[in-house]
Image: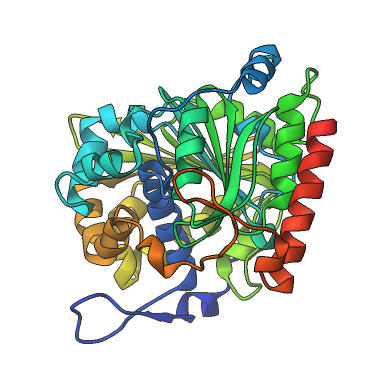
Length: 409
C-alpha cells in the first residue's frame, strides 16, 4: 500500500500570532518547520553567539600546542556524532551577495552588523565558516572560523564573565563561566577558530577537543555515515545548508513524517538562483528508500504548506508551483525557488524583532550572581564549587573531568 499523504493532516492547524494582527493565523505544523529552517539559517548567518575581541597575548604552552596540531580542515566534519541538526553557513559569501544583502536589510535595522562588531570585536561578515550543531538535551556547539585572534577573543570573553568556573591557557586557551544570559565555555580550537558551548554540552565539547588534539583525527563524527558524508560533499559549496545527519523525527500525525519515514539523512541548501531575477534557490537532498509515488505526495504536501496563511506570507504558494522532485537510486532531490522580495517582506513581518534582539547589547553584568572569592586583576571572580548550588557544582566537576579526559586522549 502506498504511503499517500493523509487528507486529515492538511487540516491540523496551530495558531500563530503575528505582531500587529487582530487575530491569530492558523497554519499547518509542517509549515512552521519550513519557516524555522529558513529563518534558522538566516539567524545563524548573523551569529547568535557573542564573545569579546581585543588585544591579548598567547601563552607559550598554548602557542606550542596549537602549532604542533595538524590543520583542522572544514569545521562541520569535526562535529561529534549525535547531532540532530547541523547548520553550516559561509557568512562572508552571504555578506558579499547582493541578493542575501537585500534579505538581511529587510529584517535588520541599519548598522546592525557594525554594532555587533563594535560590541564583540568580531565582524560576522568576515567569517569564512560558521557551524551550529544541536545535540538536543545535550546542548549545542557553535564553531566559527575567520580573520580573528581566537585566543585573544577567548581571554576577552573571560574578562566579561561574571563568574569564571575554569580557565586554561595550556593545550587550548579556554574559559568557562557565566555571561550572555547563561553558562558558556569559549575555546580557541585554532588561531582562527572559536568554539562556544550552549547548554550542557559537556560530552560534545570533550569529544571535539579530543579530536582536535589528535594527530590521526579518526574521531566519531556526525558526518561519519556514508549518507551524511555524501550530502555534505554534494551541497558543500552552498552558502547556507541545514543537515539532519540521521534523518528527522516528527510527530506521527504530521503528513511530512509519513513522507520522511524512509529517510536516513537529509540536507536543505539555500543559494542564489539568479541575481537578475531576485530569487533564492532551495534544494533538499534526501538519502533513503521511498515509495514509487513519493514525488506526487511531496507535491501535495508542498501545496498544502503553500496554501496556508504563513506559507502565502513567505511566498511558499508560488514556490510550490515550481517544485521539481527527482528520484534516483540513492533517494530523491527536491528543487524550487522563492521570490526574494516577498520572502523578505514576510520575514520582516514575522521575525524582525527577534532577529534584532540577537544583536542587542548584553544585559548588565551587575544582574549576574557575584561572589566574595578572590579576583584576578580586572575584578574577574575566581570561585570554587562552594559558591554555587549543588546542581551547578556537580556540573562544574563533570565539566572539568570530561575536559581532562579529552586533553589526555
